[in-house]
Image 1 (cartoon, rainbow, N blue to C red):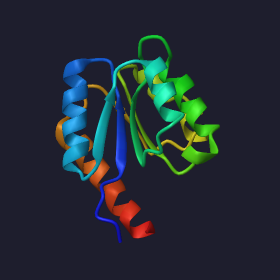
Image 2 (spheres, rainbow, N blue to C red):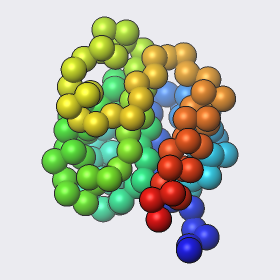
Image 3 (cartoon, rainbow, N blue to C red):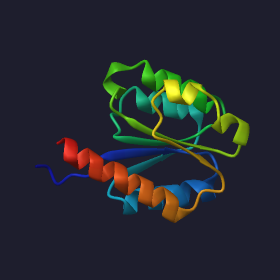
Image 4 (cartoon, one colour):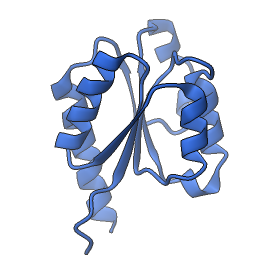
Length: 130
């Protein structure tokens, strides 16, 4: 069994939120990379194989929905788990997220504890699949 931590990408353009989210996911047992724009996220998802992606829906350059669709059309990212974060309550009820196999949709403001606890559950589930 490997002792290395699985990779998580936090894709969030607000620096304060990105800091809170990355700390929460790190404390849940993941290595974390923060990505601040949608175009950077698309490039990174073409080379990375994250176990988890925390994805804001409103990003500069490329929308979160486009990033999610891109990832879900990529066979190497088929097992990547997604937590969607949005400030748009109407967007949180979109059926596209059920179709894209999203783990959870969190509506801002999102607390450190809530995200950490959810990421810990996913980490435990991932270890159980090894």
